[in-house]
Each structure stands twice: as C-alpha cells, then as structure tokens.
Image 1 (cartoon, rainbow, N blue to C red):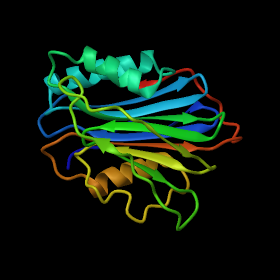
Image 2 (tube, rainbow, N blue to C red):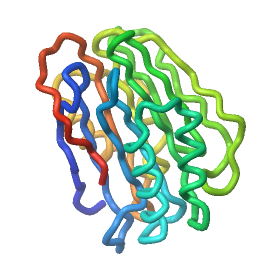
Image 3 (cartoon, helix red, strand yellow):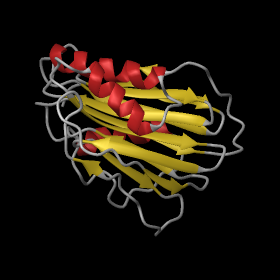
Image 4 (cartoon, helix red, strand yellow):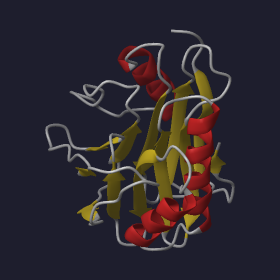
Length: 222
C-alpha cells in the first residue's frame, strides 16, 4: 500500500481532547486531496475530514480552501461554516466533508456531514451504541442540501472517528479505543484502506475531560 504518512501521531490541541491522524496519498500523487482540520475553538475543539473530489492537485485545492474556512470560523454554527465553505469552493471540483465540534464545556458533540466522509462516535463504554454521522447528499461547492446538524452527549473516553472514502465502511466495526491514539490511527488505516487508487485519511479525537494534558494553540491544517 505504500508508506503511511502520519501527519500527527498524537497531539493535545486542547486540555480535554487528544487527536491523532494517519493518511496516505493515492498512488503516484505527490499531494493528497484528503485534508484534516483540528483547531482549538472557544469551548473545545473542531475537527474535520475533507475529501476534495478526485485526487491530486485539483482535489487538494478544493479541500484546502474548505479547511481554511473551517479553521478561521471554528466558533461559528456549523451550517454557517458549511455555507461559507460552499462559497469558497465555487469554481473548484468541490468536496465532501464531515465536521465535528467537541464542546468540552457542556460535554457534547455537534456534527454535520455532506457527502461520503464517514463519522462514528466510538463509545467509551463497551457494548454501547456507536452513533454515526448523518451524511447528507450533496457536494460542497456545487449543491448543498438543507443543513441540519446533530448534537449528542459525550462521556469521558468517547472518541470521534472520521474517515474519507478511501477507507472501507467497516473501520469502526467492533472497535474499542484504548491506549495511545497514534498507533491505533495508523493500524486502522493500514487494515481498512480500500486500495492504492485513492487518498485515504483517518482522524481520531478522544474526549478526556480533566486529563490535564497541555493544550496547544497550534492546529492540524495540512
């Protein structure tokens, strides 16, 4: 499958949330059209996985435009953010994306997906349901549906998993999140990548209230 590029094996961007990322380019491509976002916002952390349509430089251009909008407006309501992304991607190939805001203040997750970037809330409690993001039909930059975000409660240890369509749909089946996130993200990508013809990205964000991790003002935006 080629070398896996781990952009951030694990990083505490917020004292209550840790993040890990693994991704790999499509075969023969020097850049990826799959772009992650993880940025600290007022009450927590905003994370997203963006998949520019196709791959290579045109896909990356679309995805990075959306990433810049999300990072710049991370405290805005998600529908407003998606509308801004839609405007910014006019004239590009467009993109699919799922964006999630982890609110450390009220222990909640709000998320919204357009297209086929999967989102799963992997529960800390064994045997509990693993809610999936509702993915609305459309293409950011081309056609948007009515934007209705969903909000869910979080408990300590719950983990948001985002994966682009270069990763198969079984990635979260039976998944338990224990220990360091970096090796887990790498392992999930290696086991569940569909094949070399597409970019692939896995992002994990675990809610750890009171963990005391040193939050950074830096962002994952690559």
